[in-house]
Length: 415
Ligand SMILES: [Zn+2]
Image (cartoon, rainbow, N blue to C red; front, side, top):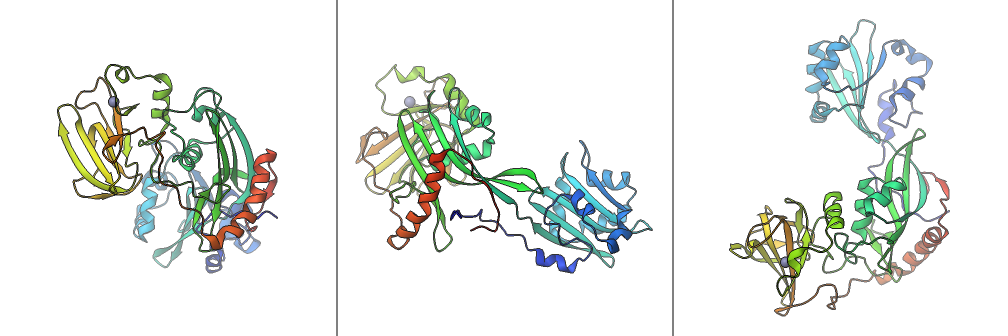
């Protein structure tokens, strides 16, 4: 079998189910209907009073309890049972609640699944309830997909069935090499090997991205996920260098909104009116601006021209500047350390700006340079002791990527 890493989950601890004999052992899924179906004979005494409720719009727990004829006192004791019970206050439409009652109506058990892979089980213990949090182990299918960009990365991803969250994670893998805000073009394409998670036969979401290839304006980048012997996961290119580098390509949070914004306006007007020493990112007011690299805040201030602006020093050689911010990030104070990717402010149009945008400058030894073309520090290679293991892991994953074919079911137990 492939040596593909599993999702790093809080693995379901079904040993805890032994304490609750009324939960069928075979039910490793959160699907409450299946749990009812899976009941053994000696549990049938409750089954006539078992009920699955689907949360409706404008429902809250009190409304549901009242509708089902369960007393306010019982609701109170559920809510007071444990800190975890607070999560019952945030139920939303479409989620399921499973109730189990005694003949006299006393609530014995309540199961709530906030997300498909997780359930909270409340079991009566005298006058109170004991709560267990259960993570369900999904079945994993490895999928190989191909996307071709015409309008935007998000549109291309949606067309092949990827959700926005997975698309964001795909972009984040390459965020040190590709400027997803400005540089994505029609004709760019990607291949992705991703875990598809299933529970009781239902698709419940995507897991880890195991490998991906992205072609941006004819430049190809390849990344393989690798979990080292210590359990630390990261993405590496085929020669074993980390995809992470000293500076992010775009110091701006890549979102569906900012990406659509830039697709519409590839050439900002103010780029041409004056000698320009930076890169302009047109983006909606409030888009998070990120520290391009780890460093120290040299300035977090205001001038008439710059508006609210931040200067970060990265060692003695490099400096980055971020202008026209609507406001600063919570930790952005002069002298403070910031880490790469930390939010240092938000896009605005303060100072001399004709519209909301981020003006970004990159300096090397005090001189303005183009961060796209300037030689930058090399990224860290994989630990020598891990290299052999990485290579043997990489081969089947790359073969899968190149094949373009999904291999089908890989059980969660495969490692
Ligand atoms: Zn500018």
